Amino acid sequence: MTPEEIWEAAGPAERLLAGVARNPAAPVDVLLRILADGPVAARMVLARDRVLPGPVVDAVVAHPDPRTRSFFARNPYADPEQRARLVDDPDHLVRGHLSREPQADDVCMPRPLPDRTIVRIIETYEDDHLWELNRLVSPGLQRAMTTHPSAKVRCMGIGRLSWESLTPDVRDALPADPDPEVRKAAEASRRRYERLRDPDAVREDLPAHPCHTHTHLLMYGALAPDVVAASLPRHAWLIARNAGVPPETVALLAAHPDPKVRTRVAARPDLVPAERRALAVDPDPGVRLALSVHPALSEAERAAIDYEVTQDRSYCHNPPYDPELLPDPEQVRALALSAHPLLRRRAAREPHLPADLVALLADDSDLGVRVLLGQNHPDAPAALLLRCFLEYTGCDRWHLTGHGNFPRTGLARFAGDEDPAVRRLALLDPETPAGTADRLTRDPDPQVRADAAGHPRLPQDRITALLDDPELGHRAAANPALPVATMYELTAAAGQQAP
Image (cartoon, rainbow, N blue to C red; front, side, top):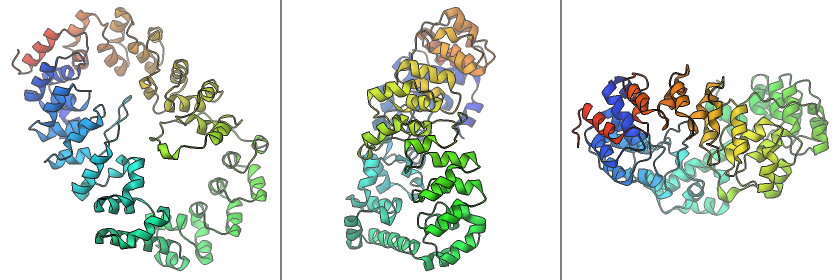
């Protein structure tokens, strides 16, 4: 059964016990009793959906039920070192879930497993567990894979990287690698690279029908003039991304009738001044916008372009940064001081932005700049984070509330807001009045009602009444203000033996 099916199949008593399992105030002995004898829905919530005390982690890792261990393998709240204890689990299901990234929720972003655990997975897991592993490899391990002591890690490193991205020393050493599988992988990578650089080989390998290989070759392969000519009518958009096409082809693409093609061409670094001038006055606003951030333009040239930056898009978290590939500070400063909002947005994504630029961009006129700064900088100020939440409605909006600087006090004033997401803010405030929390348990929005049922200032009689509510009972059981005695009673009612 999937987690969704497990939850749908759970009865009221099981769901109440799942609420207790998620309750941050639940005593360790209650959690251990649920883990030992509780129904699968309660064990699922306990192992997957919360931070666990050390003794409970020990019990989960040693639990006889592989489903329970697999739930912990995908717990985004768990410390990666805790999850890594499952790396040698005997069950295929547990190993499979450990080799995938845990599912993030509205606030919690999963953290990667330790490098040594990833190496252990590569060395010992079945191939069908490795297909999603690429997302879990840290930048540091990725750099070291092709020279790693483990042959299996070297093989995977060769598969992850293109031949041309390997350093000359690595390329020279791989043909003499002591492991035959590494030598085989290196030779295959080299041959793929050489064929990609050979126009005759690309012509020979190019499928007649659209597919992944067709797209890849047109975007990255060395294209002979006849291949370009044959492909331009239908596939100009792909060729516009090909860095190796000659200047005469770039000129043709820059004048292509499809604005999507011209938009792609506008991002090419090899545009000559005449092409940049033509695209700067292109009749399509998307083309002009794409050209306006071209690295060869001066600030004055950008300002002369009639472009418009819209606010109708979503802004999301960046992937983790590679500390060895940090951007040049002066380049970042130039981006932050640019008059172009899209360039300032690039600067706002940098988590190492200095304090003076954080202060500057926190008051930027562009919503995208402010939101990206709030989502990506560890020192984003509280006032900025709250302002971003109130003004931005795109993806990762609620993630802003998980920032360490997001304000918690003073949010009760939003309890009557027309936006249900803003009303939820009132339930982050520990000082929200009991009557307000009580009222919000009857809110028309289901997420507001759920949050209100778990607010610690909810009156005790309301918490008790909600335990019988089919929708909110498990939320009330997770309320930290629930009396411990009631937690014991609920475990007994679910078939547990009370202490």
